[in-house]
Length: 435
Ligand code: SF4
Image (cartoon, rainbow, N blue to C red):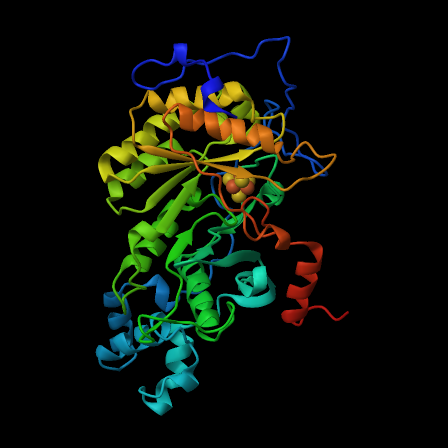
């Protein structure tokens, strides 16, 4: 839409747009959110049930990546070896991406197997790998030690390699549009299970599994994941402690961790306000993304059930607080859904709420959905999408339509779910199914 067609008479000096409520004569329809093909679990009050606590189930075995370097050293001393061996083991895992004792030739031959057993219990077994975009997008399906299935998606972009990681098996947030939440929360993932997704992806890159081996830094450096987004399965802030341990290990210099830049790590949430405030206090300048998807509580209560606990204003205040403390611009994720949340007045209301909290602190990423004929969860018309983006930009809110790479392999955010076939493949892999 031509931004000049906006009513600039209503534009105050700050650039803030005044909300234009829909006029009944030309108002577009309002589609309400609803789960399709499954039933949302509801509580006694009839509202979608939220599940914050992980069920008490067996936890994964402790892995080297769960420990600090000092803890690894203490364990290696307990095993009767000098401290420096912990550093060597860490180098194998975090720098050479291997936990295979046969590759650890600088360790005493007669101890390699028991060291491997003590530090590298198998965490993620690959069940399936789907490749698309000429090899530049790879989706992994992993089976965890207890049979739970999670996914991660690896994407090559010009100048960066992104990995979308999972942080929980299932999810307790019960969003009606999301396949992951259908089965509820199975359990939280451990720090090492989160980190192993990155280490395994780095190994695949080094082996040429992401469109071939490419040289960087005049051929002196191996390519690796330099961008993490917590937008796979799970609500990362509902697994706060373990996710933060994993983040600390990502940014710790090698060989204690992966030596990544905190700025390249995006922690996203559907709006757990107290956890956003806690994240603010951590002083690790990760990129913070809020999956907002609606600027009005009436719609958001249905679209993101956790909104019934923490309303939009409280969540936006917490997000603004994150910017104030870290200086890191907050990303607002907004999936544009036809006739549900893509009305022009919603773009204006969103701009109004963001501008009311100051300028320059936020960036909006509208995300086009897949076209799904007959579903309430379908893509906005291109002209509607353009208008939505234009209205935000015209109100002074930097807005960029996001790339939705990986959709053709069903690996885009919010669509990550293990299919029945995946379960069969996983059972086969575990040797527990013979078909
Ligand atoms: S959209 Fe995110 S928070 Fe909501 S159910 Fe899916 S994974 Fe959980």
